[in-house]
Every structure is written in structure tokens, then in C-alpha cells.
Image 1 (tube, rainbow, N blue to C red):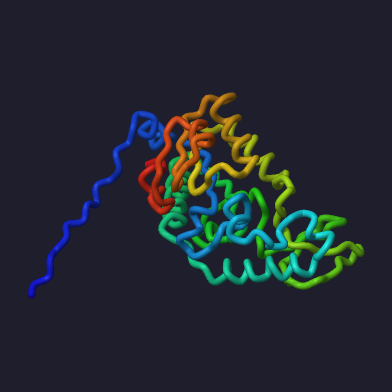
Image 2: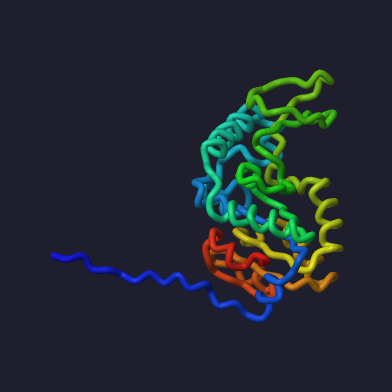
Length: 248
């Protein structure tokens, strides 16, 4: 019995007028979320999705005061999973785009909500909005050191904690400073793999689209109406397909 051959359709997606404008831009802000790392096997770290998957995880600001050892153990497990994961096609296509734009005197400025380092391992330069699992910080003096994932004390006497923001905390100040600088010189903004559960992302998108009038695109699975309404174009698709929507 012969095998039935199936024809695969590799045609690129249809782009609307706004998307064509974005892919022609030379200076673009890209914000990436958990949906980009999910194909690499990593679960959401923060937001409503993470809370639904693991509602009792010691990942809230109050947990650091009440049960610090559990907080450290929790982040140790997440750090191990992140270290074992590999960058996927989405990460790699973003790196290619960033390098190509830099060579053409443009820029792709990346802000990630993810605490893994898959962007870096794909050779991208990124700003971490919520910190990195591979680092820890002294809660008193703010000194950063490679994470040991155990209860430890800084030479200043303060407790070292995972250098990631817990639920109920804000976002990294240096990331906000970098965004404010980037949005002034950018031509468009793209969000990929996030449903807008981050207050920072919502505020930043609002500034980019309302104050600066940048064309905008959201690429994520099952986008919500409230977040999607902030964008000129919304695509319900896998994050790995970001290559079709990046500047060329």
C-alpha cells in the first residue's frame, strides 16, 4: 500500500498595510513574553497564567518575608529548567533581525519579560524587565552576584535573594530607563508571546502608541480583546512565526 503524500503550504502570512509599514522600519522596539520561551519547554513565570498553573508557588513578595528558603528553592528549580532549555526558532530569528538591522545602522531594541537567558544564548542583546534567574541581589545594598540558589548573606549583612521580581513587585528601573530612551528614537513597536498581564507592558505600549504614535503589532496565542485593542494589528499565531513580522 502506497503512502499518501500531503502537500505542505509554506506561503508566508498575508500582511496588512500596517504590518508592511512595520517591516520597513529601521528602528523597532520588540517586547517578548512567556509565549516565546514556551516552545523551549518553559512554563510562564509570572502573571495570571503562572498563578493558574501553580497557585501555591512561593512567588509573591510576601513569601520572601515569610518563607525565604522556599522562595530560593522555587527559583532554583526554575533556573535549572531554564539552563536545560534551548533557544527556539523564534529566538534565533530575532537575533538574525537584530544583527541585520544593526549592520544597516538601524536597531531592534529587545525588552523581555522572561527571566531565562534564551535570548542571550541565541546571541541577542536584551533588557530584562523582571530580572534573571541566574543572578541574585542583596536586599540591602543591591549588589548583584551569580546565583548560588541557597540562603546566604552579603558582606554588608543583608540577605541575598533571587534577582527576579516577585508577584506584587514592579519592574526593573533600568529597563524602564532604557525603554524611555528607545521609544523616542523608534519607528514601531512589536509585542510577541504576551497577553498583556504585565502592567509595565501595558503602560509602555500605551506610551508608544498614544504619545509617540508608533505603528504597533501584537503576535500571541489567543490575544485578549482588552490588550489587543491597544494595537494596530493583532495576529493569533505561534510566537516562533515572529520571523514573518520582523523588519526586513
